[in-house]
Amino acid sequence: MTETTEQAMGTSLRPTRGAPRSNSPLRSLLSMPVPQAAAIIASVQIDKAHEAYGRLSKNPSPEALHDFRVGMRQLRSTFTAYPEAFPSLPKKLRKRLRSLARDTNQARDADVQLGWLLSSERQMRGEARLGYRWLVRQLELRAAEAHRVLRVDVLEDYLTLEQQTRAVLAHNENLDSLDSEMDSLGHLCGEHLEELASELTYHLRHIETREDEDQLHAARLCGKRIRYLLTPLRAELKGSESVIRRLQRLQDLLGDYHDVQVFGDRLRRLIKKAALEQSERLLELMLNAAPDARTLGRERKQDLITGILAVARVVAKRKEKLLQQLGQLQANGAQDQLSHDIAMLAAGLQGHSETLAG
Image (cartoon, rainbow, N blue to C red; front, side):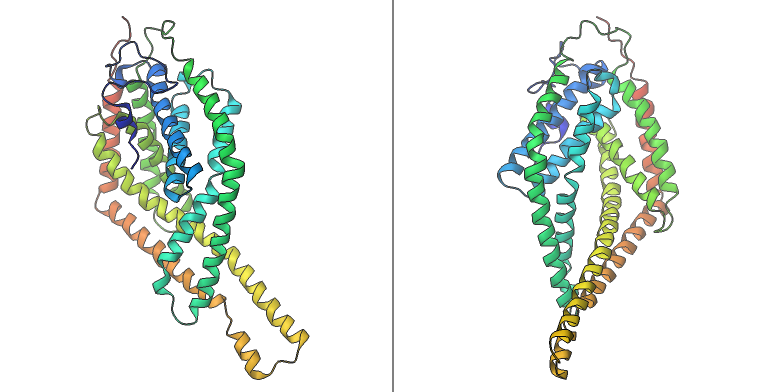
């Protein structure tokens, strides 16, 4: 298991390789000036991505890919949350980091979809099994190709981007020129958190049916940004541990729902391919021979569509179950309580105005 960001920092908040050096190693992250604190957080996050990159390069696995993606997302989230901390971050580098993260989606989705499909095998019976096995094979091929692209086109770019990113963080080493009236990280984090709390509340309250896919997606992304803001501060921010844990629970539900939606789109494309293959096979049989009734009947039993439709039914049931779980969180007040607790954390952080002079 990889370390959380704050565990990797340790209580001394010692900067990692390439991170700016703090004049006060024992100083709270919350009270540090934004450029220094944000750079320490970003340094730990890029170290996490680098460690996962090493595992992914040597022995590719869904776990290593997940950890690499998380490290990269957290890093980009820090750059987005505290732009004033990284004035030397080129727009081109920011775009390339975003593009690299996006280019890992295909491999990640293929792994998730294949794993989910394999876990559903017991629900496939009788005539559905042929189409089910065809689907498994299609996803296996897709996963293999996605990981090939990941190795050739994505991972080769990472080390160059990491080097450029660490150079940006090195600009934050000299704190002599910082304005003594500059906001602390805690204060600025509180402002961002207040905005995100309102946004999350809005999206969650507008999720009522499966058609509210835009709200579901927006709530998922918003909850993720809140977690990424709070996670580096959980060791010193009272009440954040519970909020992060509940956000993770909500994130799991929303993330699972999003994955099911994406898998549904994949099935829409694959059923067209299956129907075409099936029709062409029957057509060639009729064009090249005059099959007897037994041969024709045997060929017609090579039905792929039944299995794909059986998988689609399982997908629909999964979506219903996830919506019910989200509805239960809303009905028992858990979502409102979560939004309230996030807002309280934001208010407390905005009151964190320790002076940075001296």
